[in-house]
Amino acid sequence: MAAHRKPRQRLYTGSAARTAATLAFAGAATAAVLPGAAHADPAPTAAQVKAQVDRLYREAEAATEKYNGAKTEAAAAAKSVDALRDEAARRTARLNAARDTLGAYAAAQYRSAGIDPSVQLALSSDPDQYLRRASYVERADERRAAELGSVRRQVADIAQVRAEAADKLTELAARQTALKEHRATVRAKLAEARRLLARLSPAERAAYGAAEDGRGAGHADRSAPRGAVAAPNARAAQAVAFAYSALGKPYVWGATGPSSFDCSGLTQAAWRSAGVSLPRTTYTQINAGRRVSRSELAPGDLVFFYSGVSHVGLYIGNGQMIHAPRPGAPVRVAPIGEMPFAGATRVA
Image (cartoon, rainbow, N blue to C red):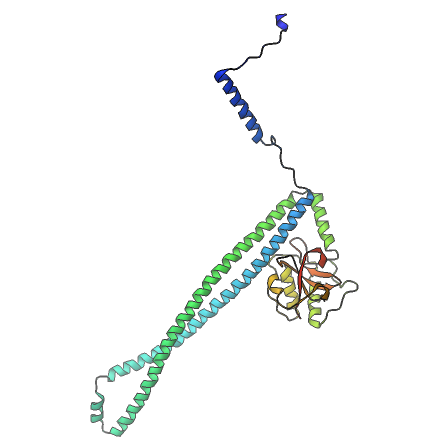
């Protein structure tokens, strides 16, 4: 009978009990941190990934426009520095020539300075001729005094030009720093978007691409759609024609053509083909013409989107535009209603 009895459980007391409790707690803690032991956050759905990717592309485009602006400003600052340096060099050459002339005159004065003018008059065989020469010298001295004043002014002017050049160099350094920061931001946003897309299955990535293509249906059609509205003038017509010729070309951030574009690079190139110079960025292009309401839109107008005015397209009529959407999506025709409308500008 004793062999079939249930063994008594051993009770721990004192230090043995404390040791057992410590081991149990440690085991529970280890289980909580081991991979797979805790409840993992659920993987984002395809819809959530799409929303995050869309947001990253919008943020990347906003950073791209800031990059474009910083690049334009850096180029202008560099041009100003070069111009100021050239001006300083030209002024320095003129100053050196004036100094040489004054130096030669001073040497001549030094050689004749040992004879008192009254003695020269007394020794002269022709006092009248001496007096005439003296009057010439006096007038020459007046000219030399004026030349000396000019030299002094030139020295001050050169110092000012050099100070302006130093200020422009400081501005250039700041623009170049901003350029690097915006470029890094764009690259980081695009890299994160690619990382998120890589988490999708091939079928989900294909569905995402198909949805984007559907939003820009007809992007490969390079001819004007049926019922296209005529442009209000020849320059607007040329800008629209250029935009049609760019359909299907890839989006590349910072690009202005001819083989690839970003959004403001496309509109700038389109109007450049019509002989109109637009500024480089969305937030400057919106002020490059007369503001028009959505109901007044005509082909050739610039249409802007999002609260930060970070995207632009070229209106072609019937509620449609041609734009460069984002990396991986070529220049295409799209409805202006697919993004939050921010305003429109008529260039010409």
